[in-house]
Length: 366
Ligand SMILES: Cc1ncc(COP(=O)(O)O)c(C=O)c1O
Image (tube, rainbow, N blue to C red; front, side, top):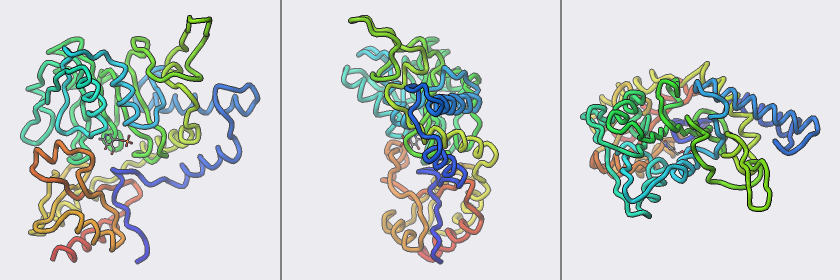
C-alpha cells in the first residue's frame, strides 16, 4: 500500500479539489489586493471578500459587521485577550478542557497584572459542569476539547455564567466544535467566538472571530485598512469589521473559506467511523480508550508502550495520527497521562481507512 491513511483531521483537515481550485482560480485569474484599488479587478476582490464574509455570517447566524477575518483561532484568542479589560481584580475563569491557544493569551495577560485564574469545575464525564459555574468577569469556554471531542452546551454555560455575573465576558473556542456542529451565535449569546479555517477544509492562515458587540471594543492591531481619517493626532477608525482587520487580508484563503463552508455543511465527517474504531479498539486488552463512543475523536493509550513508539510504528504503516499532549496539557494532567494517541476523521475518510487503522493497531499491539 502506498496511499497514506490520513486520520488527523482534528489537527488539520485535508483540502478538497474544489477548495484548491477556488484558490488557484483566484491566484491565476482574479488576483489583486482588497480595499485598495478602483480597477475592476480590485473591486472584484472586494466583492469576493464581502461574499465570503456574508457566507461566514450566514454559517454562524451573525451579521457581517460581527465577522472579523483573523489568521486562526490562536490569533483571534490573542486579539480578544488584548481587547477585554483585565486588571488585578479581574476574575478570569478557564477550564481544564482548554487548548493552550485558548487559555494562555488570557492567563499571560492577567498574570502580568498579578490577577488570579479560576478553574471551572468539570463533571464526572469531563464536561464543563453547568451546575457549578463560579463567578467570572472573563470566561474562556472551550466548546469542544480537541482531546475528548465532546460538544459542550455553550448556550447553557453562558446563561449559567450570566446568572453569577450579568456582565461576564464570554469567549468561545469553537475550533473543534465548528467541524461537527452547527453554530448559532444568537442562541449561544456569547461575546466572542473563534475558529480556524484549516480545521474545516479551508487553508491555513485564515480564521474567524465573531464579536457580538463590535462597537464596544477598541482595535488591538494597527495599520492599513482600519483607519478612516487622520488629522494630526486625531485618528478616526473605520467601522467594524474593518477596524479589526489591519493590513492585507489572507485573500486567497478567504476565497477558499467560503467554498470549504459550503462543502462542510453538505458533508460533515461521519462519526460512525469513530464509533466503528471505538468498538474495535475496545476489544483489544492493551488499549485504554480515553474518549466516549459518541465523541468526535478517538483518543487512547496502549499499556506498556510509549505513545511515541506507537505513533512511529503507525507512521511506518503510513497511518497519520496525532500523538502527544495535543497542546491540551491540563486535561492530561487531570486524567493522569502525559499524552495520548488521537485518531480523527474528515468527510474524505472511508471505512476502509478505519479498517486499515484498526488492523494496524492490532498488529502493533498483539
Ligand atoms: C480546541 C482548539 N483550540 C485552538 C486550536 C488552535 O488552532 P490554530 O492552531 O489553528 O490557531 C486548536 C488546534 O488544534 C484546537 O484544537
